[in-house]
Image (cartoon, rainbow, N blue to C red; front, side, top):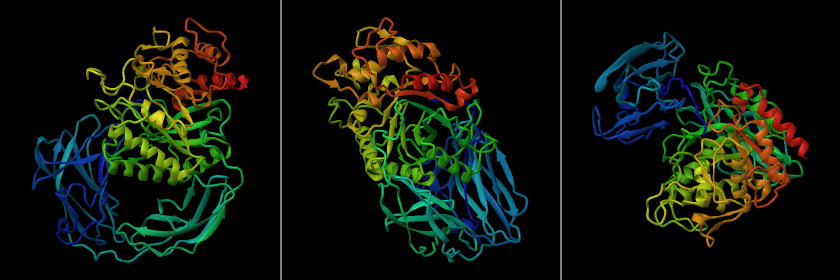
Length: 598
């Protein structure tokens, strides 16, 4: 559904705090023989062929604006010369260093399918004790490989000194479901890289700024917090003394109880520009009730490790600082808005094929929510993220691992954050309404196994689901409950697709196997915000005609819904950015219409 469009450089960055003599000997796993052990990587994997030395090499494929980073920290001496090299393959591969304290070097090559060694050198500045070395590909040029990374030069003593204990720890900005903890920066001889915040003595949340918002809390409840600082070498200070904060009274409900009766949901291009222009969080128009940050994406299809990286300044020159972004999120929440992390999108396929991937998904998504103090999660799995195995035909008891693990992961997140957690989903019609005709590979195995694969997930989470806004665009013709095929772009398509969600429908036409109807307040209609945003754009007049038919039983076209649904919740748009690009026609026109409905 959601195209990221032109991408910036995709980079594999090796963050190294340079090394002792014959530095490669001091790197953990410098030739990737132990897969990615010792490295913190995104969008990367090891391969057994081709390799330069040993049995494995690193492979990274630039895609979208994903920087495909891989980092490892080692020590360096000031005012010292170092030589950097790596064996590489690929169309365009760059090798360089930043933060050297002098002239930052960069070299590149285009070796193609033959191994070639890139070499460069630098001298550290008089106070430099860490540098960032990087390998980098170029968007659209295919994958590149790297092996046998070497940084030669005299090294410094290992960093064993922890940072100072954070001071000035205090709580504030209390709501019925969240508390914000702030503190003064700690100091370290090399540098503080993260802070760990423990609530009530539990496992800590990790942040890189000097604030943390704990969400999903119970109303009128006291919570204890303590903070410690850690450096790149893994040295951590002692925890600060505990401080206590208390949430306010009157928490919200799991079904979006603090949302208005009629909602506008918009996706914000938070990690890319896509030709529509970057919009700061503080500049998101007030018409939007739910703001979905697009996107959190996995480090690999099956890792379950979700990362959210805000748009780089090279692509989005107007991007705000991390602190300003977080402050703007808080301001929106103070206005009653919900801000969610959206996982997936067109380029972010997520397959939780193992329980390990499931658990990693839960931990990494929770880390994003905690870091930015978000209200919940939007699941926007597309492509090949979900499919049903042969024989998996029981809606209520799925057996396919990627489905079972996703259900378990979402339930775990809901349990972690409690009743105030907002859970939304944005599947395509192929994964939902197509189930009226096809469900998985079908009885003879001839159908696409992805057909209607979202249905068991929606069904299992229906008691926890705040909103389902199926994408009524980028869709082929879909058969409605009237037995006719409906085509996107007009009122009848939206009426027919929404009617299936609110009336329920027989899966593969079997009256003995029915997808039960959802509550009216759980359903919104998904639309492109402009003709630029996706296929199937529907004019304002046609959207209002569809909503009139569904919510009031008037102004219907050829399709007559099975009922009248006055509680229909609202509209979703891809995207806030494309709407602004189009003069805000979507948000202004539909906000006024929904408000008039009451």
